[in-house]
Amino acid sequence: MARDFDDDVPRRIQDANELISARQRDADERIYVVTTDLVIDAQEQLARRRRLDRIWRAGAAISWLSLLAAVIGTGIAWFTTGDPARFVVGDLICGGLLLMSLLALVGVHFAGRDVSTLQRLEAHLASAQESLWKQKVRNNPALGDRRKLYREEVTTAIEQYQVDSRKYRRIHNGLQTLIMIGSASTKSRPWTPARS
Image (cartoon, rainbow, N blue to C red; front, top):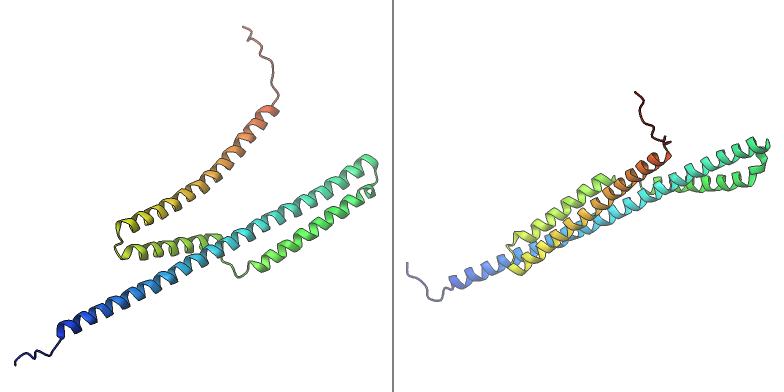
């Protein structure tokens, strides 16, 4: 069969290849947008969980401290004067603080019911960031884009190291303070030579 010179197969193949590559770029762009949205959503949920956890810890600390202050204040008033009613104003203030902090704890409990645990959210965020990074790398980017990806990864690693550093610094400083208080509170005896 003779070839028809009006047939433009190479042009149609080229058009089809361009259409396929355009659709692939469009799909990759949509996947990138969806993955970016997943990362942003995971970051927002993690921030919300951390905020709820901070409120919970503060409410618990205030409730315990107000209860402790009320008991100690009433006990001191009772032992010193024999009349626990002398600390009524203090008891009312501590009771009000206790009630407000307990209401805050109940509010945080109900607000945090639909939010996952901190560990799950951190794992979800790490997974979403990993898939976003893979999506960026999949297209074999140019040198400038590779440098940007490297800087993003290094920035993330540095931020994580700084968070870990602050945590361990707090632990270290707390232990050092405990050691200094313990050593200062021990009774020191003067040195006496041993007798033979």
